[in-house]
Image 1 (cartoon, helix red, strand yellow):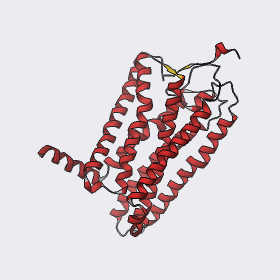
Image 2: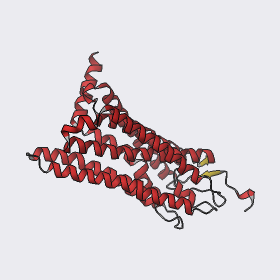
Image 3: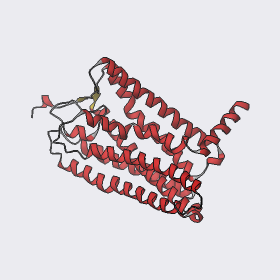
Image 4: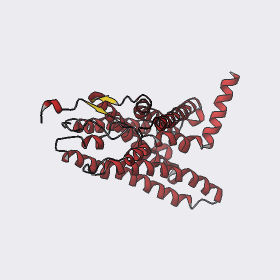
Length: 309
C-alpha cells in the first residue's frame, strides 16, 4: 500500500447531519455532562466533609465519583464540539490518548463496582468480620490495585491497537475513538486484537460481572431472612438499582466490543456506546448516593454548617 494512503488523523462521527438535531444532541450531552459533574462533585464533597461518612462504603463511593467525573470528561466535551462546530478531526495521538483513558477509566470503574459489591456482601452477610476484612489499609490497597491494573491494561490494549496500519478510510464510525471502530479501518491483520477483546470480555468483564451477581444473590439470600418487611424492602431497593446499572454498563460494552469487525458500523452502535460511556457516570451518583438516606442527612448537615459558619 503506498505511503500516501497512510492515515495520520481520523474523523469522528455525529448522530445526524441535520443542524437542528445536532444542536439537540449537543444540548442533551451537555446537560448530562453538567449533571454528572454536579452530582459526583456533591458526593465527593459530602463524603469528604461529613465525618459520619468516613467508612469503607463511602470511601469507595467517593473514589467512584472522582473516576466518573474523569471518565465522562474524556468523551462528552469533544462530542459536543463535533455536534455544534462540526470539528470532527482528531489526531492519531489524540485518538490514542482517548482510547487509553476510556479503557483505563472503564476498566477501573468495573473493578470499583466489583469491590463495592464485595463490600456490601461483607457488610450484610459477615457483619462481625467487616471491620477486619474492609479495614482502611485493605481499602486503599484495593483502590490502588484497581488503578494500576487499569493503567497496565489500557497501555497494553492501546499499544496493541496502534501497532496496526490504518490505510483505508479515516472515518471512525463513533463519536469518540474506540478500538472496535478502529479495527474496521485497519489494513493489518487484526486477529490478535480480536483475541484480546474476546479474552478480556470473557475473563475480566465476564468474571467481574459473575462475581457481582453472585455477591448480590448471597446478599438477597441473607436479606430474605431479615425479620421485618421494611428492612427487606430497604435492602432490595438499594441492591436492585445497583445490579441494573452494572448490567447496562457490562452488556452495552460487550455488545459493541464483541461485534465482529467484518460487520458494517451502524448508528445503533453509537447509541449503544452511550450506555457504557455516558450513562454509568450519570446514573451512579443517583443510584448509589443521592437516594441514600445517610447522604441526604450529611448534605443537610454540611449545608447548614456552611450557612451558619
